[in-house]
Length: 277
Image (cartoon, rainbow, N blue to C red; front, top):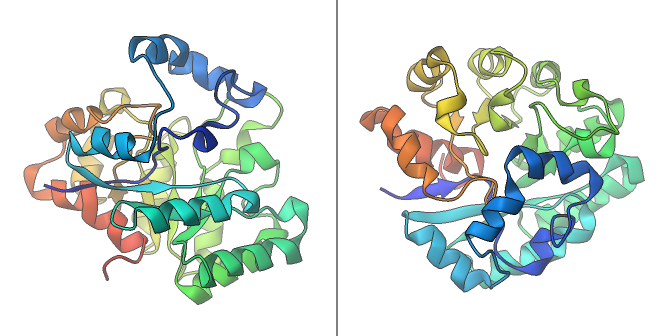
């Protein structure tokens, strides 16, 4: 069975800016949470190259991975990586309205029209701009118009400089009401906000929920049940490598019913990214 990982970082220096050799302040808590320093030492983590990153993926039948950036300055780099490895990597673009709404729209249009990136990656907890901020509505309109997805960080975050509710998944509910044809992705299972992320994904035909960075062992049994029932065509797998390594695939296979595994590990993500209908 092929696996599409919805969030990865190739072991190339550019993709670890702000993380290595020392994490930026907004990421330090994540390093503690994932015991990243210890894990990096155990793995003898080295910045290698895309070829070696792809080899790591393929050991667990991860044949495709979604790469991303946080602002428009990284769009060209994401594009270049996708161009170099078109059968492996799919890119999400960055654009920040706090740097100007018109600029953000232009940056994203270029990323879609010239770079053919699959959607927009947004982390409100880093930019300090709520997902429902009116300045973002031209971005959503553009994504909807062009058939691109919007992937929005919607789970508990650990940036001490911004409020927790910047990641409240309830904001995705409001956006889905206003943009019913826009494919929206709630990230990281909305962990930290109870079941509301699953409820929103189940409520709206255009809302999906990824479980990137999440070990299934931390989820309540009824959430696993929802992934296998109401959300079987909405739930998406991902490692957010290196937060989790690719062997987490085997843990997820233990809790996802065999008939749902093609959906969870590949087809749902492919639908969001426009790879299939």
